[in-house]
Length: 318
Image (cartoon, rainbow, N blue to C red):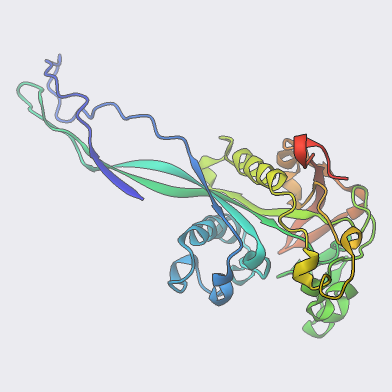
C-alpha cells in the first residue's frame, strides 16, 4: 500500500533570522500499526522453502509473503537458521498474524526561496506499509513433546544430549517418537504424550510460535499486540478447530462420539527460545520444568504454557 502526499502545512510566509536552503515542514504523526489476519492457506503447497519470499510463485498470498519477509530477517539473517528450515509443514494449516507500520519517506524535498524564505514547493512524501512483525498459531494435533536434551533440525530429532554432533541421517527416523512416524500426526484425533507440569499428555492445545519483530521496532509493544490478537481471536473462536462428528462421518454410522472427541479448553503452548522466556512471561506464560530443555536449529528452547478462559461469558469450557 503506497500513498503519495504533498505537505502544505507551512505555506504561510515567514522571514527567518538566517537564510535557509531547505526547511522541511513538520512530519505528521505516523498512523497506528495495523494487524492483518491470515487464515490457513491451501495455496502454500507450492511454496519453495529453498527460496526467499521474493522468489515464490505468484499464487502465494502477499500477506503470507510479508510474514516470511520478517521471519527471514529475524530467524535466517539474525539467528542463522537455514532458509530451507524456516518454512515448514505447519505453515499450511496455521493461522498467521502480520503487523504493519506506516513508513513515511521523502520523494522530493521542500524548496524555499533563498531570498524571502517562502516555501516555493512543499515536500512530496510517500507512505508505505512495512511488515514489521508476525506470529502464527498452529492447531492441534501436534507431534509429541520434544525430548529433554534433544537436538532438532527441521523438526526432526537428530540426537539426544549432544548438541555438537548430530547422528547420521539413517538414525534420525528411528529417534522420532512413535506417534509421528509415518506422518500419523494429521490422521490422529489424539496424540498421547508424556505428562508435563501443565499438560496431562492428552488435552488438545494450540501452539503459538514464529513470533518475530524487526530489530528496529522491538521494545515498542509490537510483540504484545500480536500475542494479544492471537489469544483474543482464539478465545472468540474457541470451537473452530474442534472436529465435527458429521465431518468425520460418525453420524452416518449412527455413532454418538460427541463426548469422546477432542475439544479445546483454553490451553496454549509455546516452544520458547531460552533467552525469550521473560518476554513470554509478560504475557502470562509459565515455564514447564518437566519438559526440560532442547535445541531447535541450534537454539536452546523450553516449553511454556498459558490457560485462558473461553466460552460464553468468558468462562472456561467444561
